[in-house]
Length: 322
Image 1 (spheres, one colour):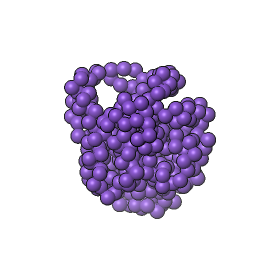
Image 2 (image 1 turned 90 degrees about the horizontal axis):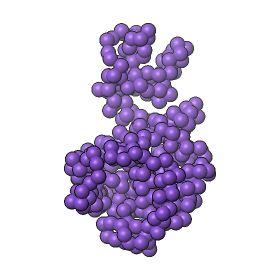
Image 3 (image 1 turned 120 degrees about the vertical axis):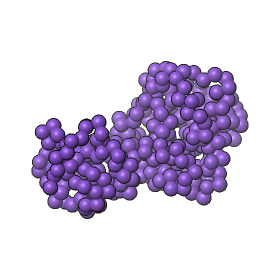
Image 4 (image 1 turned 135 degrees about the horizontal axis):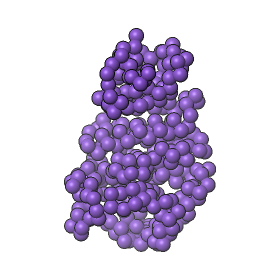
């Protein structure tokens, strides 16, 4: 029985009915909106049945609300059921992309707060597996992911964006092997994990960094590598993008001034995705560029990137992910 409650809409997070799985047990409160009031529809620990879903649909309810205090429980629930959601043909591609993206942001945010916690690393692996499955499922998946991406920069939204772009770019290049894509995706998602060791004062500075601050930032690939090198959870192939995503074809990158033949192909893919997302994302000290001005600027320094990969990214953005 629905219970009328007094709760401010700001305390609630909207979710789609399609994200809830039949015959699963929900460990969070569910609210619906009735006559501009929010009603407690379902308490935790109750199974979500087909009858429940039908009742909501019969009453025209497709959007529900979860209290902010239950946000973590909801996202953990989504993570547990992500594969099932991706394979559900009744859910639109746009909805799937939004669910995956929101889940990924939460995983990376938790990971950056506690990068050495095995549970968070394991969650990131499962998330990449689901994202890869989604991107490979249809030709339009990358375009629907682009629609839901956030281009207001945070380290965790940037990490998810780079993972998505890198996987789509790899697919466009003809890399279809699930294991390779999985290892690449993990390295891409974790490429900035080393920033967890850098002060928020530097990371969140509202303006360009000075020389000493930039030197500290340049340590993040090495910090990231040190965080995961002894982990039995992260595959060896995934280490390369974490350590090498700022290396450049002509040896002008960091931390080891590697040249083209010394840089792993996964690192080259992530480097391009990293720069493109950084340029097309809004920062406090500069505006985001549109895609093609960003690509034009990247072509101006094409000697620093793998040319074939940059051309492939251009085709990917212009002609979809076929």
